[in-house]
Image (cartoon, rainbow, N blue to C red):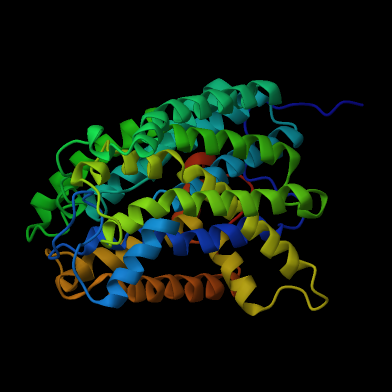
Length: 423
């Protein structure tokens, strides 16, 4: 007997017991993201031609800058994109498996995308210009319309098209590297991100205007033209249909190869920019500015590192989950944060901006790259502890709960804490 379908989407659908890997990966991902955002708050330090990191500081500062450029910059957010796409497809699958009409399930995700844009705009206006919820909301509208109900073959063709565009983007950079003419692609030195993120503006109101302007560009360009994010979201769609993160034991060879190849290539392609930044390789300033050879190489290959991190964290979660004693308290706390990833992401800005920005306490003027990284780790640990406390009390993250209420409406079945999170 076939299962009857309903024209309306259901509330958050309860499935089997949550797998550890997706939530653990989201919890670790939030650490990588908060570290990646630290440079935006070092508003009193001189920045180099890339506009991203300060060019001064102590030896520990230079070590941190080198590590971030190699392993984190433009490599953490592709991890976010994969997990976001994976979560979208799992929500769609749970809805349709529970009998919801696929068109109604698609409309539900469309509402989610629209609300993410609203959340992102509020986040930018109040705290953080570099918000990515808005761009992911736009990408949700675009990719769900084009691919959500399509075949695996169509999804992989879409991913191949995004990959081809990235290959064409990086080809001039590779040619410049091989030809020894690194300065021929670049532009003038890029404006410091601290300026467009307005962390150094002493007026909160003026800073809000700058943040919204930057956010509008990030949201439109990131949502429509960020082909690394599109590629990773589509790969997340494909992987979710196979439930790779929930069933890693069935895909261990694939995960191991992806972890080794992805992380290795992701770090190798970030290494030239890191060497140039800390002065171990002398290159023209244009090479690391926006559109320069090294900048293009780093941006167009970041998805490799992100995909490698997905596989690495999934293998780690599998190992933890299969221990005789099961996941320990730290792993469960990390997973609790992953279940509440939207709340954790917004908490970063709540703890960062008022303390660090010039319109707040202005502490960003007194920190270097190393001390800022320590501050970021501390902020992340606060969110881990808070998420663990909520988990033990059976409570969801406040932002996650609000988003679910707005997407599903009132009078729908309640979800378990953190269920259905795709951010």
